[in-house]
Amino acid sequence: MIDKFVRSVADAIGYVTDGSVVLVGGFGSVGQPNALIEGLIEQGAKDLTVVANNAGTGHTGLAKLMELGRVRRILCSFPRSAGSVVFEELYKAGKIELEIVPQGTLAERLRAAGAGIPAFFTPTAVGTRLAEGKEEREFNGRRYVMETALPGDLALVEAWRADRLGNLTYRESGRNFNPVMAMAGKVAVVQSQHIAEAGEIDPEIIVTPGIFVDRVVHLPVGDPVA
Amino acid sequence: MSEASYTPLTRPRMAARVARDIEEGWYVNLGIGIPTLIADQVGDREVIFHSENGLLGMGPAPASDRVDPWLINAGKQHVTLNKGGSFFHHADSFAMIRGGHLDLCVLGAFEVARNGDIANWATSVHDNAPAVGGAMDLAVGAARVWVVMEHLTREGRPRLVESCSYPLTALGVVQRIYTNLAVIDVTSRGFVLRETVPGLSLSDLQAMTDAPLLIEENPHG
Image (cartoon, rainbow over all chains, first blue to last red; front, side, top):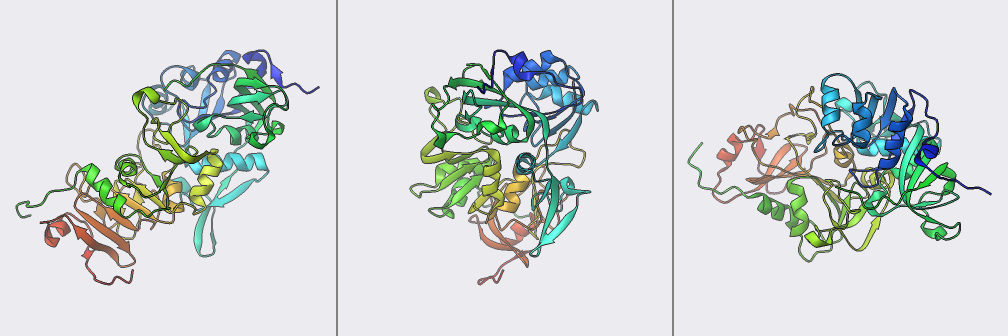
């Protein structure tokens, strides 16, 4: 019998090699897999590349992982936010590499990685400094830049409901990057607020089908704290 | 410049002026800042607001005792969802944006050039920890891109310019600019003045604008 449920965060995270690319779901504090990030901190892997929309706030979660010097490079659309002090200090000190990616390009690079598309052309960022050095082509008289797929070794996802097959639903704006990160991760690990029996989640409302998911840990952590 | 005998619009009145031109049935994304204020000004018209983080049918801020911690907008403020609203993931959200499905996006900006170039994400090439968010996708994707901003910077420099001095967000995309002093269309011939606040002369407005302001009755764009 397939059973993707594991008992602990440590079991969910598993063995992460140094230098891994880690995709972290969430937008602001909503849909952010905080317990899994803590698990990654415990696990100890270093020299990581982190892909996340934001670069963490305060001194917990992603910010703590960075503060511990475990992140070599971060890809974000919006690293700066109220309380992103750790990132800003590391960046100023030249202790972390930053790749700024337009938010829609970030989402599409992840989707492409999960969908077997190695690269695509987008009108976003044409003629700006974020397109410097990138291949450009014209289609039907309009300019586009080539962007490449962004696969991860590990995806950390927060879901609202999960079953043993790894089928997932999300809650409201907690969906955000989580489904495309689940697709783009070689291994996709989920912390879920609720669990369900197989067949209990209406197939019509499953957002991430279990094929994209490897391990699920049940963590009823409650509402996101702004 | 002559003695000021005009009153610049306040931010809520700028938002109200933009709202007047938004049509029933449009799908609209509002940027952070003054654009956010527009949502409260569309009155009875049914306008569907989109938020980059996966919402269509975004409603106003909730009462303080009715906050839903799972429901935020792209500015990470708590919001509500109107009847008929929907949730979707980020790739679908930006497919709506890039795919030309939005009728309108209203953005704030540092500068807009007479050819429609917009600079609204970074204030210098060496910006500390720059952050772009969805600005570049919105600027190239929506069917209409309007900008709402103060006519001058805090230091008194024009924001409507011959060419942008700040890092660009997108090339040649802005179609209309609403400032606290005027409404200006961006056409293939440059800035075309549509209206000003009462009492403001063309020469005074031109003195606060870094590119020629054209006036035409029947623009050919």
